[in-house]
Length: 279
View 1: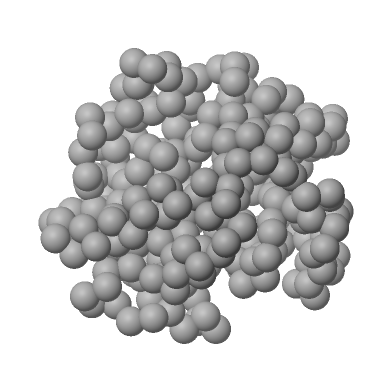
View 2: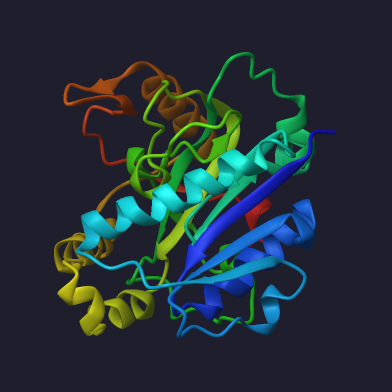
């Protein structure tokens, strides 16, 4: 079995940190989780006990500049970990790399069975979980998230270079590696939950610090997606995730050869019941 670590950086988000540590801790062992806190004013919550934790001076700058600084910190640390680990998973705090339960494998079993060759990274298909505001009520935060959400947009934005196999530099937000192409693996998904509830969006839109750093445009786009989702047809998960992997493995943006494209399609799929208890 390959030895695998996971790392993230967080600020003011104990809810998703609890989900993140519970999920990756069960899969990899909490002793293999590495959590950086953006700001020495942060408090390490109880859910992070047993993990490596470090309080950092606040990363200053607008959203673009601060994202670059944060990912440079995480890339450097991941490079050091790859002297002791075979793979390092890097995600934002609201992102979860998940193996399709129909395959009957845990995340470490699935990644251990991969033939990565000279790949720098492995990518999971991006699934942006979005609340259907016409059909789905506010989340019960004590219950599994995927037991309450049934819709995801297949998103190139969240098909990230989440699993490093070699010590290379991540691009901002784990969206790519600065050297090397994408290697998207069928049966592996990255679920993003930033749009899974309107309350998450509301908290961010009311955060003056995020506004001052230039997050408004990104947050308005998220709100627009949430309003659009009920108007889009819901496609079959198995059929369209296969198609999306095929497309994203072959198509690239003209302005970014190492970022996947999908012909601008807005594909919403129904999340199968088999995922319900995973996060």
